Image (tube, rainbow, N blue to C red):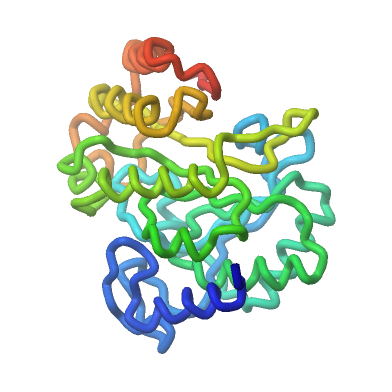
Length: 292
């Protein structure tokens, strides 16, 4: 694998952009903004030591989290919408991005955690490559929506140690209604398989800290329990029963969710209990649950 060639290919993909599955075709490398509302510059909303991820990601010293501005999806219930949808953040150069990673490592974090990274895949690949030349040694984590272009993922192989993707939907009608894309299910499922191929199931050191693998997240949405059941069924049948799953109950109304009656209310304990039952029934024993 020639990392430098892969980085060049990723930048080439932004000439008529096909970095994400939407393949909007604009010349981002020339400063045009794609459907992700992003051109060629990196915008970062925040970077800090984060203690709120799953136990093997947060550990005792935290995760070095970098929140990128904008997103390839337009989720009506996004809880980070000021960053993902409104684009809050500051422009950062590649060298500045590298420095952020190294400074987070100096703080003792267990990993570098890229949140909503998809549309910055080319810049991330270059920055990680340069950071490793300058002494970055901790694992690099992609905390993404699960809506990924397979070709982009293949070019990132070897640069991403841990994948933390969502499986949001098992029904494309729901995906289009809530996130604005009509092919989420097929794209997401192939992407999860590719991430699994690259890194395998989540691997933990003796101290319980993850260093490689895939951990799949699913946010249980109110009024959509069948969406959850079918998503978990896919994980069991197409990934493995050994897959680590984070079943999240942290839904709350945000952004445009009040425009949808089923999303304008909180998740109930009964709905989450149904999701937990399905998790157990399918034999998905690895992972984490939340209290409502």
